[in-house]
Image (cartoon, rainbow, N blue to C red; front, side):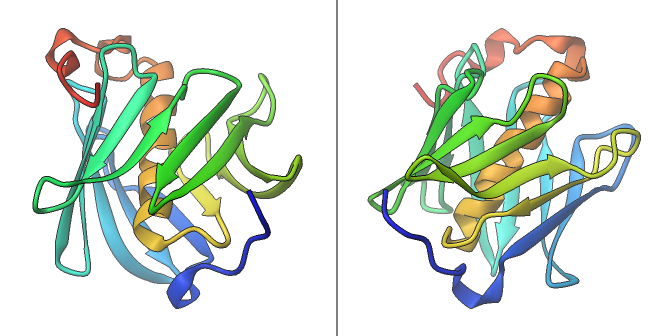
Length: 174
């Protein structure tokens, strides 16, 4: 993977604020302006969001290790692989983005390029569940996908929706 440039449209920093204590729902803002709402499913690992009038759906496999995102037309848009591992990847638009868990002791995932940290997704509030994503060079829909995957992983690890991925996701995302 080569060098990164800043994200398209100036969307370098995303903030996710949990909207409800009862739902896995997050308002996602870029540069202080709300751009999407991540509506996570309570019963399966995944959910949906709308960006610029386009609807995206995110689904997980049974184990929560692979996620896929499809666009409003049902066509594959992005895929995340080996998510539950220390190192995992996202493929989108012909590029592969490498991620690594920063530590076992804190909720943070690093975006890596050529062996060095170039961005991250991290919790800003353990109590509320808020997070921030700094993913330079990654297109905005893919940034939201990465943020949604990480939020879903953290919510499920914290015991959300009974703490285990249900059989209802078995056919999703491979």
